Length: 123
Image 1 (cartoon, rainbow, N blue to C red):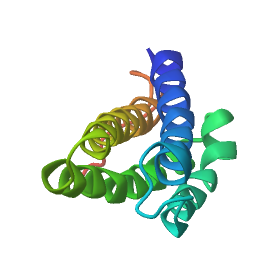
Image 2: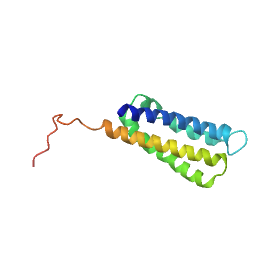
Image 3: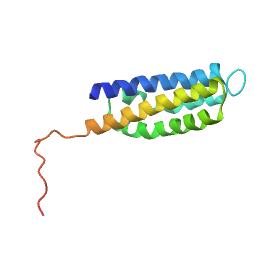
Image 4: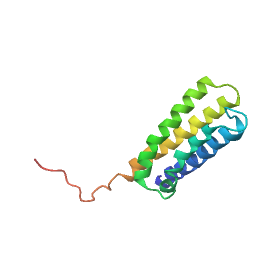
């Protein structure tokens, strides 16, 4: 289960990076010839190394980063038309998958095994 969650986070993060770049530079840029909005993919590169290596802490803070892309996907899915609307929906789905995989990965890797010596404190 943990491997699948990490793999889901990896795939959705990489797809989200490529989607952001393709959307703003080639597929449906705000201005002809590409726009500076393509730089929105740069923050997604920050957690890439930690996600690839399955680091729990990276999954934890990257989930918060995903919320910005979920927000943008929702706003642009309701405000844009045509291809940009479809790309916003794709961004929303990828960001949601990334968020969920990160949250559940952090949750699953944070559990201590049953009977690992944890005793409840006595008051």
